[in-house]
Amino acid sequence: MSPAALEWLARFRRYLASERRLSAHTDVSYARDLAALAKFCDRMGIGDWGALDAQHVRTFAAHSHAGGLSPRSIQRRLSAVRSFYEFLLREAPAEAAAGKRARRGSLIQGNPAQGVRAPKAPRRLPQTLDADQMARLLELPAGGGLTARDRALMELLYSSGLRLAELVGLDLRDLDLKDRTVRVLGKGRKSRIVPVGRLALAALRAWLKERAALAAPDELALFVARTGRRLGPRAIQARVDYWARRQGLGMHVHPHLFRHSFASHLLESGGELRGVQELLGHADISTTQIYTHLDFQHLARIYDAAHPRARRKA
Image (cartoon, rainbow, N blue to C red):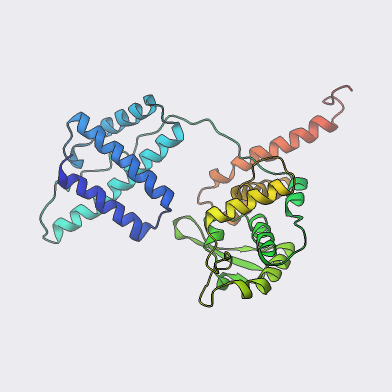
């Protein structure tokens, strides 16, 4: 690729960092995917972005699959290409209209990745904890300080079905104890308000008393570390794993498991799918529907255990 074409990649990354505010993990993944696209273009003799067409993108996806990349990773790779071309389609004409020097890659006719699909990935059901396992995990020993903090953050994860990034980003002002709600900033910087359960409220009240002695005077975060500053995602993952081992669960437990369990338990108890979608902050209900498969598995186990024609003989 020409230096001018590669400059568009650098500009796109700056755009992602300043405006889209993607997570560091997603930013690194997009950079890796687009670097792979640039190398592919070099091998194909493509010098600027306007010369890339849909057939090239299909070949790029096929080569990625042949190289051992999973269908999910190829989906992300195509998503990165689509986002990059949306950026080009918006920015390149605007730059030309402003009278700036035309750059290579500015003559973009369309998004060549728009109709390209990745190989179909097998649908994996999310792992969950059952109600008894969750109760066991949340029965932390009595204590203040960091134990009170850990109890509060785990109760909130399960009570409100938050993503890890949403929990990390919570400030004191986002929690309304009187209204029993919390305001979270989800994917795409979309805000939603979700209810907070009784036990989570009690745990949060206990933590707020402890937080006053731990947090730095100017710290806004709801959950803080020993340093008095906002608790980070790696620290939360480590604390969840620590308590899972201490409570004897015998399995790896991560923060997103609380969200999966939250959704699954709501549906098992007769929750309405559209309502669960709103609580989880899913833009598309098809994302939420995967939990109905877990609900069916739960019902199937009940059937196998109870129906006279399904029970196995002892």
